[in-house]
Amino acid sequence: MRTQIIAGLAGLAALACLAGTAQAQLSEVRVGVVAHDLARSIEDGVQISGQLVFDSPDFMAPVWSPRPYLYGSFNSEGNTNLGSAGLLWTGNFANGFSLDGGFGIAYHDGVRDVSQLPPNDPDRIRLAGSRALLGSRFLFHTQLGLDYAVTPRVAVGVYYEHFSNGQILGQGRNQGLDEIGARISWRFGQ
Image (cartoon, rainbow, N blue to C red):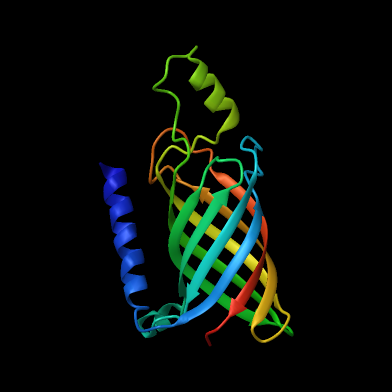
C-alpha cells in the first residue's frame, strides 16, 4: 500500500509538471542507443531510447528552471522496457557543451521478483539467471548526460542512467539497472 501511495504521489507531481507545459513547447527530441544492464550483464540486448524534453514552465524558475521530460526505452531482445517522466536540469559550459542531470519516476514491464515461485521451479531458475529482479513496478530514474551542439539545432551526446526502487518504492529485490548510451538531439526550443 505504501508503494502505491508514494508512486501515486510521484505520478501526480510528474503530471502536474507536464500539465504546466501544456502551453510550453517541445524543446528537444532525443533518440539513442543504450548499453543495457551494465552492472551485472544479466539481461541481453540493447535499448533503443527516445526522450521528449519540454520548455521549463515559469513556475519552476525558483528551482533553476528544470525542463519536464517523457522517456521511453525499448529492449531489442524482449527484456525490460521502461517509460518515465520527470525533470531535467541543463547547464551550458564551454563552446557548445552542455551537462544535464535528471530525476523522474519510471514504470517497467520487467520482472519484479521470483521469490513467490518454488525454489526448484524452472521458471524461477531461468528468470533469476536471465532477468534483472527490480522489486517494484515503479522505479526512480536518474540520469546524467554530456552533449555537444554540432549546430544550433543538432547535438550529439553520451549519458548514464540508473533505474532503482531505492527500497522506497518497493521492498525486497532491488537489483536496479545501470545503462550508458549515445544519443542525437534535435533542438527546437529556447
